[in-house]
Amino acid sequence: MTTFYNNSTNVTSDSMTWLLQFSLWPIRIVCPLLIVLCPIANWICISIFQSPIYHRSSSKWYFIFIAIFDTIYVLVTAPLIFLITFQIYIMNINIISCKLIVFLNYLSCQISAGLLACLSIDRLLATTCLYLYRYSCTTNISKYVCICVILMLSLINSHYLIGYTIDNGFCTKKHYIWYDRIYSYLNVVYLLSYSIIPFTIIAICNVFIVISVCQNKSNLKKKYSIKKPMKIINNPNEQTIINSPPCYSPSTYEKQEDKHQVFVTINHNQIINEIHDSDHKCRNYRSENLSLDREETLNPVDQLPSLLNQPIHHKRTFSHRFLSSSPTHSQKLCIQLQITISLLAISISFIFCTLPNCISTIMIQTYNDNDQVRNFWQAMNYFSIVPLLITHSVNLIFYYLSSNMFRNRFKEDYLRETNTTKQFALKTFLKT
Image (cartoon, rainbow, N blue to C red; front, side):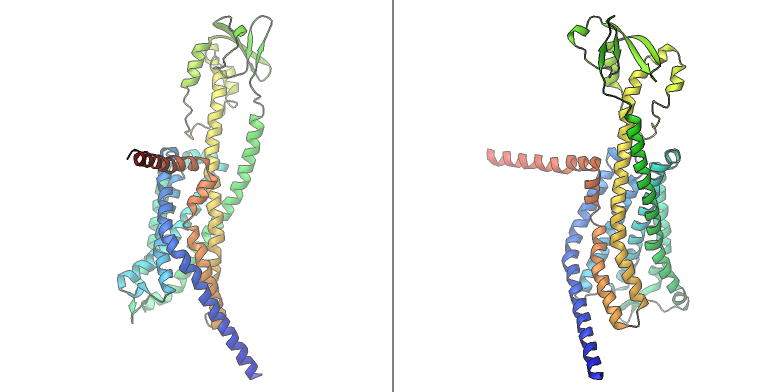
């Protein structure tokens, strides 16, 4: 029995050793690629979110700072983990590298998670509480929130700059009595700030965001379903009932007078008879500013009762404003929807790619006395590092796939310039 037990123990130990060795290869393959691709991808994200199309968006600063600290996290962690697989420990070089690597590693991942949670709250207000969002979620406020989160987490993680040093050639925490006493609590703070609190906020906000987006889409379908395709109907008195845009070009037999009477049907029970110049209305229609400012959120349908009580000179342009402002409102809602979908994409990726690493880290600490179980979870931890690093590097792909506005800007800034450069180089080559 003893011989059988020893043989089974050796087989288990050999299998754990093989599993640990195998778990190192994904890191050795992926880390060099991410060291090159992550800064490029996140820099593209930063440049696009700084473009004028996101100028009035309250979410742009969250996306920008998330990209910055994702880059810091990958550039600090990926080389460190890659060299550790070859038993090269750059943290042990000197005390500065020891303190900075530990501090930046913990700080950057916590800030990315914290800002993603704040972005989820911002999108939740944008989809469920529009009045509060208009006055509380501006670009300046979002920038101040990002700065406060960065400063607060920097202060919380500053103990790594104090408590770590080089001891006997290894980067380890100092053996201060007060630091040893609170270090276990600091690990709890790390788990709360990086995983538990952000995961909870992101999950709850995303559930309500999905519900709100579905409700808004159904409400929009009902609201805009009453707007039928525009048609021109001629009456016997050669008067035209117009339910089309002012720039409608009538046919030859309809162009009998420069001045014609227009009947605008409102709520199917009131008709406004007005005289106007078609060319003048067409110029007004073209000069209308279809701005995308999110402050303009009132629908002309909501203004209808007050407009009916106004004098006739105020009513003259009601039909024109009713038709021209609806596309503007739908465009703004489309922009908000694209930003919200981008958030949902990166949030789901963050949760599913980060959760395995958090679970394996907790299990390693739990089974610290059992070598076999600890080695198994250590191998799982190595496997979980790969998706953890990937989720901080591929947000560009999620933005590109989920947002038509981001995709068009990317093509305009990078793909068209590349094609123009290739064409110019080809013409130059042919001339020579």
